[in-house]
Amino acid sequence: MTDKVANLPPLRDIIRDHELRATKALGQNFLLDLNLTRKIARQADIQSYDTLIEIGPGPGGLTRGLLLEGAQSVTAIEFDERAVKALQSLVEAADGTLSLIHGDALAIDTLDFGADGTRKIVANLPYNIATPLIINWLKQIHDQGNDAYQSLTLMVQKEVADRITAKVSTKQYGRLSILCQWLCHSIQAFDVPASAFVPPPKVTSTIIHLTPRPRNDTVAFNAIEKLTAAAFGQRRKTIRQSIKPFKDALGATDIEQSLRAENLSIDDFLSIASKI
Image 1 (cartoon, one colour):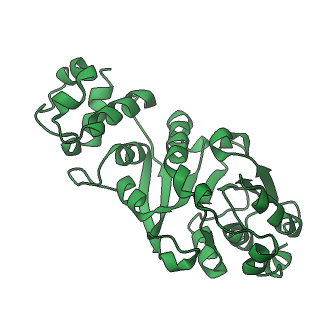
Image 2 (spheres, rainbow, N blue to C red; image 1 turned 180 degrees about the vertical axis):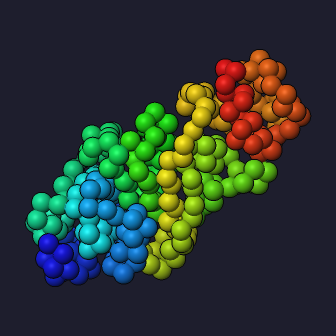
């Protein structure tokens, strides 16, 4: 199978033959360097029993990387009908190890693919849907831990990666920082320059790697989500002012109410949310 994948036409030829120009509306920027896509694939630590789920494969650069790095089961979800057609030769070369789903990733439950404890998300996420996808996967991790996903290996805008890994009392620290770090070990693996893409975006991208962490709390996901949305929706105000709908829960803690949201730790937010 790997020989067939390696001998496919170059990605630039696939793009040309299928008139697969990247469109801004779909947040598309294609990676054509197979050395780079294989490096991304290696961040997922692929095992023979893993079910890998890719969002927005486009012409298949990362998909090829996953298969060349030994993936035995890949499900790729692609919205763009042009890309679905362009990927057919890769599906054939993969000899049954690649399943291609034509649909909207925001409307598809990725838990439908693979068995519990085997799923890993590996994706160059379209910029315009990255955050809602990540939050949805975090909800599933909250409910099922690593039975939902063993890990998420994602390419996002560096700005998003910085928010995910931000420390308390920094300007990047916010709702996404808290949700990700509450539920996962969150690290930045490496940056990918704009010049690596076709067409090049105006921003640097970053590979982030999230693995579910053990938890000993029973806080509801919706409670943290609503609390942090309120707190950081008015981040210049004190916590007493920004989370007025939750003032009773705040009052039941010993947290200093004159602080701003960015000064509260994840444990502080969990403490408030546990009283809601």
